[in-house]
Image 1 (tube, rainbow, N blue to C red):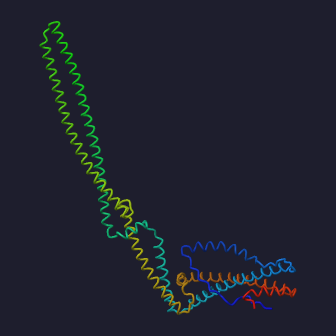
Image 2: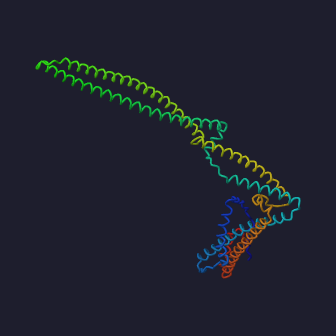
Length: 411
């Protein structure tokens, strides 16, 4: 009885997207590390080991045959996958041969378009990796208010200068109000001192009058001169006290007027301060910045980024144009897998890179061939084991036929 090792139907796999260029080197390093372990395993070929099964036991025998069947199916699935990938790698190598043998004129078209793709891709990569110190909210705000930015920077500078002046005025007015308050307290202390002096003088004059009265009444002493002197002293003291009190009242009026003026000025400056602060808060919140200096810096970054973004868009258009030229040139040569050369355009202009590509493809094909041979060997050994069991008894043969009939590739 013959067994077919491979099925007829094949499912075409979707092409996996290539990794980004910046991740490719790290992925390659990881794969090389893993391949070292795989090579050690491949050096010791894993042979299919026969199980020690009591074939006389019907249940154990059928279960063993089903396990052999499942192993064959899994090995066949692996072979189908490997054959598909092996065909792709072989196709890539044939495409390289077609490219190497291309006529000079077509080769020139391929070289020019590939070179332009590489140059533009490098430029786009450099632009993409360039970091601008501008946040996404700031970018959106500048997109929205780009026409107002220059004027708003001037406003911010003006309001920030005004803010400094207003704070200086507030400090000056605060110091002036404190000074006027101290002067007022000084005047109040002077008035209190005058009242104290007035009371003391009054007591002294009363005592003098009592003394003079006693001298006159008891000892009949002439008190005309002392009385006149006392009256003159009292008049002089009262005049001085009244003059000082009047001066204090005038100073108090002047000080209070100055205080009122200082309060009025402070209120006006405070209103300016509040409005200025709110305007600054509005403008800084509008552009998501802290001050005019930051807005000017962010705007310069934004303008530079816009220029680079425009270059990137233009570069993308040119890349697409050269991509179409390259695909058309490869199509004329009969290259089957044309799209992959977009990501490997450098190999089309650098012979050493093409050698690396060819070497890598040959390595991949060798690994796939080893995997294909291994799975083919597993299926062969499993089928041989089934043949061995079949040959023992007709009862066993029926079981083998029944298990094999469940595989769609068995005929």
